[in-house]
Image (cartoon, rainbow over all chains, first blue to last red; front, side, top):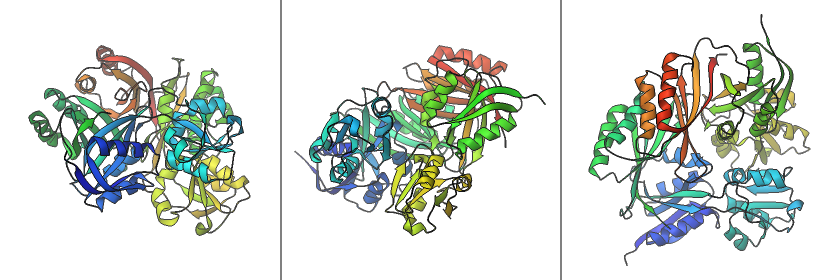
Length: 285
Length: 285
């Protein structure tokens, strides 16, 4: 079996994060051999790392089924200057949140550390069971678990995944605290080397439409006319002024397919700016 | 001059928040006399308050020019059961973040409290000047200022607006810490009583398109055909499963105008679900 040998793979850490799990899945599914698995504290630093490291991949969350788009990922993807860095694959993994602590009683907890999306995804449980607890926002769920494990306090807890209970030797106070039961996060693997493009593919683009009536309508019409399915559409502020937007659009199919190539060419006429983030396989676990 | 007399106006507090400022502007521009101005800790509780209080209005942030949509507002607007509660007006106010503390030296700060959007909006300043500081997520910028003012610690600071420096008697350590200089937040006033509908109007709707190719394209085409300008389009997860979305759409004009009425009727054919959040005046300050 042929392996893709690379130096480093970067991911949002520390160990035990959902991105760690996604990174390990990507390595095995895509037959990648990375000499080093390097965790980073922020999404921004994960992307900065691959910009400066030519033989590497990066794994980042892009969307959660409850919270929606991960803004920090999309906003930083837009800032990447090296045009050879593309999304090379996508993987969706189920997310389960647990309440972890050195304590073994829920009602002794005074402070809970977690990533803001995880806190939001468990708001019903927290509102019902721990209405007066202080919620503290940290950069990842696993960092929260690590923080609780190294602290001397017994009145603090973390919301993190099951593997963090093992890694950081914490008690599981509650193992079913998600608001919605279907909680899935979609991850991208990014890099300069192409991964296989078999089976079902997807193309992600960012466009800024011309500032005239019907511009976005025209963009969607082009895809419809070429029988291309839209799987995602989201707007982000241009950050220039209120009321100016860019759009993240995802479509079914690879950009080497004739109809997609033609559609993307036609798109140039109706847009001020197009960036192809990648055209990649959707991996299944 | 005719006043609209109401019992209560609810807003995201505590006093000094940007929502407080927006609330006061709405009262004066819309000629509303409210017996009580009641601050609430969360967006959810602001909306629950007007659901249970028939003679009241509520003021909530909906969008910021840098961060984008306020997800908690849109997700909770969707949950309102009383069909008489509508968005009655919109106002955009400029946002300026300051670093406030009892201390007078930036380099003595170890912990910073603020709303997660404000922390994100000042990330460049924080990364450059206070890379090792602990960032603590609280429910509003003014609550952060209040927390710093009542604490005995001199190594903590809050990111909040200028009025919080006065209200909570804090030093201004830095007064220009926004990443982007054009930082504006758009606020809605909601209630059961209609406010004036003069000048420029807007209609906000939430739709769920039929699950077939070109459904969203068809929706946009209807607006384009009727010469209706789209001012905003955003997707939110349906929260049922990854890949299912609802769309927040804003268009220029009032829903009593013939072309808008006709377009909304045509929309029924191509959507599974429509909720009109309101048709309202855009107030200018």
